[in-house]
Length: 90
Image (cartoon, rainbow, N blue to C red; front, side, top):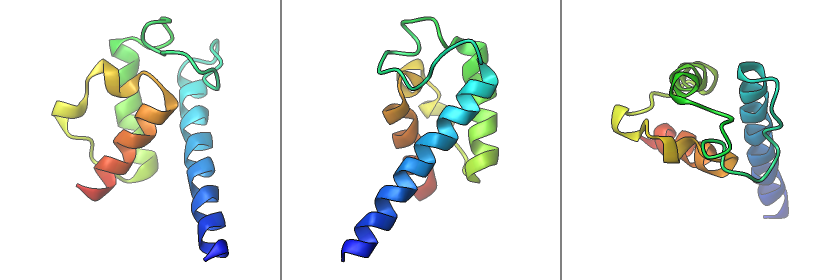
């Protein structure tokens, strides 16, 4: 049981690191480890979101539904992670 929970935690941390790496490649001038709203702080705009969707789909082998491509779903690491998980199960 413990080993399973450690592995799951590692996968979550790995996913967040991969998301941060993608965001940092897209907009290297920002620190995406900060606990801020990426949209409200001007860290991501609509053009960035389109590029991000393409990269997330490629990196995580998922398909993000068009109705899920709204700014709110890209406002934080947790929201992006939740979107990826939702898209994995779709």
